[in-house]
Image 1 (spheres, rainbow, N blue to C red):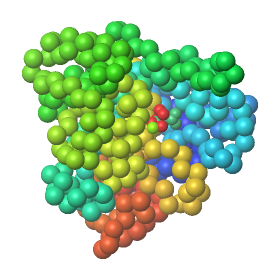
Image 2: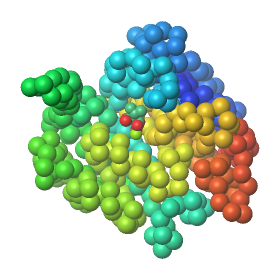
Image 3: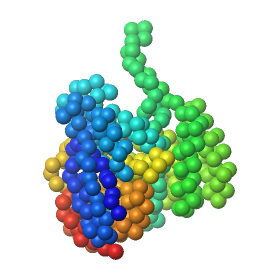
Image 4: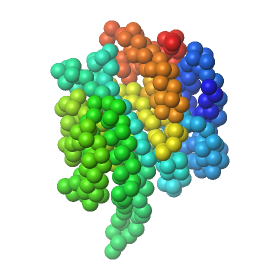
Length: 362
Ligand code: IPM
Ligand code: MG
């Protein structure tokens, strides 16, 4: 099979981690008989440097013309990078939000799994980590606070900022359906997270999710307030199967979930629309402080490439092979610095990619 993949290496550690994911994809191609054809696309700071804007129409068209897009990370150090002298709509992050919207990538899937071999890297108490966890965070990605009107104006001589939070029932229904569909393939439990004790948008969220739940009698639905969810994630993460939530809550909770897996460098993500197309990126940021040092963990990006094979290309065996190779590398004690613990072998970004490649087999 020929895989037409758009590649956004991006900023910070992006180029390093994407290079490793491409290496693994090429190895999978070699072993399973596929050809990966890459189109390099500019976005974020890298695009500002060349084009003056974080995302051009050309990049959007090229992305749309690909079967899937693999992305690293975008953004820089807000204190030192000249990108942050620009107005907010021209900064690197604006490119990411725009591509999500333009490609209608409303469903963001972030799986947080505690690998048996990474239990020592988990910051939770040993008795909590011992129970393990395997959850899928389903984050709504094209609505809510991220895409509302915003402005900063002076009201009666006082600087005042507005960010509008809107959800309509259709936006809620389509992500809820996705969440329940995914739960049907997992342990059949959905925890819908909202702030229905305060927000109207959350009250509508809860109502629509309950309506959708009626079509999935085999799935257990639980509603949870977001503050309680933040607490439960560290108290007993094993209780979660699918966490279904709106854009902002999903952003925050997915970082929290990633940390209990040991490191944000382990958390993959897929952003999907109604078609087979998806944008695949690690959930972590561009980590400018460690960029270029060859120490970043490429596993989240490599696991994002596995999600790409599974969701956009229906290549389940190939995706399994990547996931198995990652598990084996961890089992054999190879660790990047972020997940390093005593008795294991510390390796860099490139060696981690090489190790995973060497474990890819049919
Ligand atoms: C993420 C990131 C982005 C977000 C930023 C970079 C705009 O934190 O993908 O979680 O908030 O969605
Ligand atoms: Mg985030």
